[in-house]
Length: 554
Image (cartoon, rainbow, N blue to C red; front, top):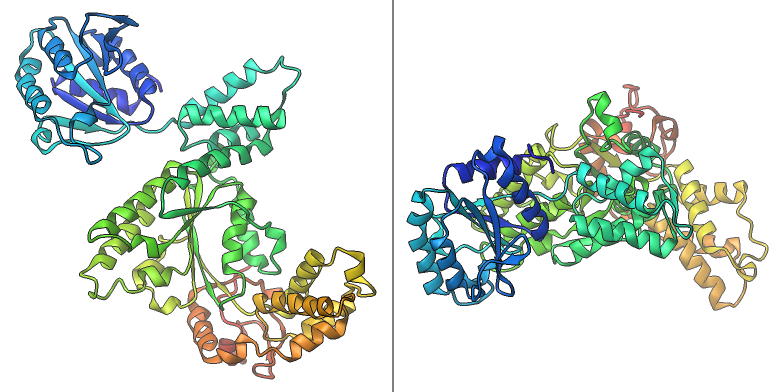
C-alpha cells in the first residue's frame, strides 16, 4: 500500500478527529501494523507524529521491539498504561476480542468498564492518543458499540501482489534449481490469479510452485488456485470445483464458445486501454442434459480461473435469519478470491419462488440481495447461472444489465451429435482389445448421428457407455451392433418430455441467443418431419417449435 491509499486516509482522519477506539478485522496483523507505522509518521496525513505501541497477551506493551514496562501482559495493566501515557501515540491491541465475549466466551465486564472509563482520557488528552483493536474476528460488545468505529482493511492489491512476485523472481534468478519463465502478460495473470489471498498466502503459492515444479511460469496459476481452494474449503456454502473439462471436450455449441473466447483475459490490465469492464456473466437455459453444466465447468479451464459452485439449498438451510447471512458470506467469499467464476446451478430452484410469501419473505430478501450485487458488483466475479425451467424465474433477473447474455442450448444438431459421439468414443476406446475392428470413421459417426436424431448429449454419452457394457459382458471388442441395439432401445427425452421442450423453445425463440451457430442449424427433424431452416425465414412457421433461440453469430 502507498501512503495515499483509502485505508490510510480514513484511519488518519479518525485519529485526527480523536476517535477513541478503531477496530480493524483482518488476518494480516503485520500488514496493518506496517500501514499504521507509515501513518504515524506521515505529517501530511496525521499532522502530529505519534509513537506506535503494540500490546499482546504474550509480550505486553512493546515499542520498536522493546518492552516499555514490566507486568503489562494483563489487559487491565495495559489499559492503565495507556491511561497514564502522556506522549502522542497509537496503541495497537492484538486479539482483544477474547475479552468481548466472542465465540461463546463470556465477556469480561471489568475490561469493558475500564475501556469505557478510558474514553474521556483519550478524547481530552493534551497529546493525541488512539487505540486500535486488530483481530481476525469481528466482535464488539453491546456496551461499546457507540465508542468503537469499524474500518475495513482490504486484501492486498494487484500492485502489492505483483511486487511480492517480482521480489521473489529477482531473489531466485540466480538459483540454478529454479527456472523463471514469465513474460509480462503471464506475470500479470499470476498476480491477478493471486488476488483474494493474503500476502503470506500469495507468497506461499509462488514458493510452492518453485519447490514442487522447480519453475515459475504460466502453469503456476494452478498452484495459486490450489491455495484459493483452502479458503473456499472453510465455508460450507460454496464448493470449489477442481476437475474441469476442457472446452474442446464439449461437442458443438460454437456460438457460446466464440463468445467466451473473445472475453478471455478481459479482467487483465490489457483490457483497460479498450475501456472494457470485466464481463458480468451469462444465463444458460435449454433442454436438460445438453451441456449447460458442462459449459459452466469448461469456462474455468478456458480462463484459468477458480470455479465456485453455489448450492442454493445450503443458502436456505439453518436457523431463521441465517439465509440472508449465508448469501452475504457466499458473495464475500467469491469476491475475496476474484477474479473468479461463480456457478449457480438450476437457479430457478433457489430464486424461482421469490415472488411468493410462503417463507415469510426470506426468498424475496435473498433475491433482492443477489440482484443488487449482480447489478452493482465491481469485482471481477463472472456469474454463470443455469436453468431448466426459466419461466419460473422472476423477470427482474432477466433484464439487460443483470447478465451480459442469455443463451439457449437446444437438442444437438446432426453435426453436434457427430462431434459428441467422436468425443466419447475417443475418450473410452483406448485399449486395442476393446477397439478390435471398430473404427471411428466419418461414415460410422454419420450413421450414429442419423440414428440418434432427438437425442440429448447425455443420452449419447450413455449410448456409448451402454454399448461398451454389451461388449464387456461378452468379453469381446466393441461392435457397431452394440451401439445400434442401445439406440433402438432408448426412448429419448425429446419424446418423453416433448411438451416441456416445446415450451422452452417457444420462450427462447425471442428472448435468448442460440448456443449453436446458424450454419449448424439446417437439418431434418424427426420431431416434425419438416426441414428446419434459418429462423429469419418467416414462411417456415415450424421453426418456432423446432429450433428456438435468437440467431446471433459471435
